[in-house]
Length: 520
Image (tube, rainbow, N blue to C red; front, side):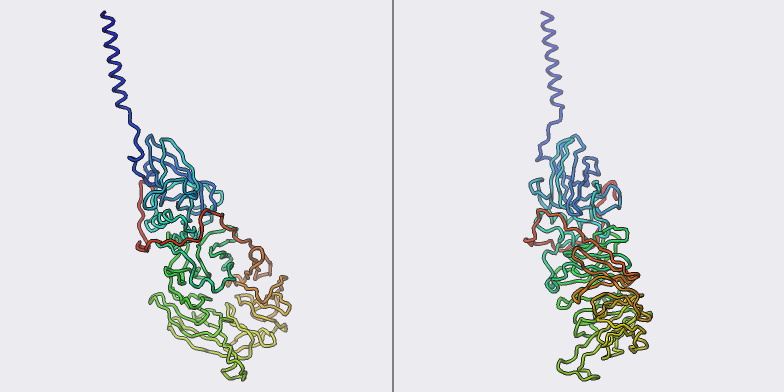
C-alpha cells in the first residue's frame, strides 16, 4: 500500500515537473508579431549576414541572407547595400527590387521582406545600382553586407524603385550617380537631334571614353573599364574635368561636371538652351567656361551662376577654340555669306573669322577675317587653315602664311599640340608637323567624308568608329589600336514602356547617413 502511494506521489511530481518545463519553453512567435528589421541593422546587431555573388555587371547580383539568431526574423533589404569583399576593387551595389517579383514579399514604402527561420538561408536575384561612379565594374567579385545605412537621398531612390519595379535600371542609376532623389524617366526633349550618334567615343590624356546607348564608361591604359554614368547625351573631356550633357528635372538638357571623388561625383553646372546643341566646352579657370554651341558662343560665370551670349554663329562647321598662353580664348567661325553673291572682299561673301575672348574682363572682339582659306581649325599648336589649293597654312602674327610643305590636302581634321591631322585626296589620314607642315606619317586606313574623329588634345591621338567598336590612332607614330565596345547589359525583367511618377526632389543633396555600431 505504501509503495503504491509513493509511486503515485512520484508520478504526480513528475507530471508537475513536465508541466513546468512545457510552460518554460519559448512559444513559437507568429510572423505577424515579428517587426521587419532593415538588413543593415540586422547585420550590425549580429542577427543576420548577407553576401552577394555572380554579379551581372552592376545591374544584378545573387543576394544571400542568413538568419544567424535563434528567433524568427523578417529582414527588409530595401535601401541597403553590398560592398566588395576586397575593398575598393569595384563598385558597391545598392539593392533594389527582386528580378522575379514573386521571389520576395514587398511591403509598404519600398520594402523587400524576407521571412527567415532560425538558421535559415535565402538566396534570390536582385536588381542593383552602382553606388560608385568611376570605379571598375563588377565581374567575378564577391560582396558582403554592410552594417551602415546609405544616405537618405539614396535610400529614398532605392525604395522608390522597389515600389516601381518596372522602371528601367539606367534611369534609377542616373539619379543615384547625380545624388538626386528624383528619378527622371523618359528621353531628353532633344534626343532626336542627332540619332546617328548612338555611339560616341573620346579620349583625353590617354584615358578613353565610350558613350554607348547613353551609358558612359572609361578605359585606362591598363585595360580597366570604369562606369561613369548613364542617361548621358554628349561628353567633353578637358584638362580640368569631364563635362557631360544630361537631362534635367524638366527633361531639358543640363551641363554636369564629373569629379571622381566623394559620395557625389557628378555636380550640376548650368542649364542649357534646349534649342541649341553644345559642341565644345573650354574651361577658363575658377569654374568659368566658354561654351560653343550650334547657334552661339557664350561665357558661363561660376561666381555669378549665369551664362552670357557673346556672339552668334551662322554654322557649326569649322567652329573650334583654343586657350592661349595668356589665358584668352581664340574661337574660329565661318560665315557662309549670302547665296548668289561672291564679291571677294565684301562681307556678303563666305569667309572665316577669329574671335578673341578675354574671360578675366568678360569682353570679346573679332580680330581677323579671312577669305583666302577653305578650312580653318584651332588647337593647342595654334590656328591652321587650308588654302583653296589645299596648302596647309598657319596664323602667324594675325595673318595666314603657307607652311613649307609642298603637299596639298582635301580637308583639315584636327589640330593637336604636336600634330596637325589632315586628309589627302585619296581619303588617307596624314599627320603633319605643326612647325613645317611637312608629312610625319600616313595612316593606312580608309576613311570617308562622313567619318568623325575625336582628338585627344593631350596626346594627339584620334578616336573614330569601326564596325566592331572604335579605333584609336596614335598621334606619335600612327599605330592603330582596336578598342572593343562595352558589352551590352544583360537582359532583365524590366521594360522601358512605363513612365511612373517619381518622388519629388525634396531631399537635400547632401545628407549625413545613419550609422550603426560599425561603418565603412
